[in-house]
Length: 229
Image 1: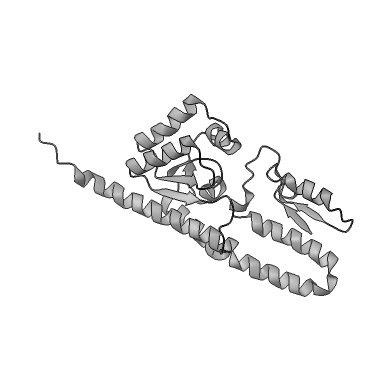
Image 2 (image 1 turned 90 degrees about the horizontal axis):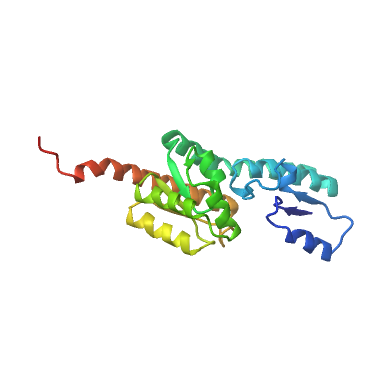
């Protein structure tokens, strides 16, 4: 059994499978299996419903390959689905408290999760896709993105810690100088964390960042002396 992301994200999987043919192998292409197309945001593991939709596809294959263990597979599926509930609860809590809060990103790694939490990604997708593809974004997109920071138009900045470029470093510095909370996200799972721990850790960081920004926003008026008439 092989599982690939699809949507052009991991085309190397086809080469690996081709180099080691096995007539009995079944490959699940997550993108195709869930109805995505090339050009869609490929970071499917950050979309909250992805794993709960992929898991039954895996179970269906395993049950055909090993019918005697069907009961075990289905019990494990229920356990797995339950393990996602704390993450879902975090997302719902953020959406309830901060729905509509504007956010900037370096690329579309965290877009699915941020949108699920009700946050509004205001970074142009053309900027995001350029960074994701390793090309230079347009000067217009760069200026628009920088203005989000200098004008303090965003509540949080999602920074891909595994895809660093000169412009993303500039934006990180702008975020710090303008006291905009930064949440570092990962494109691949950190070592020594389960998928669930990875997702919950980052969502906890999102909630803390938004609370911090909310508290700072309330304190800002008090920093300025009252105008005299």
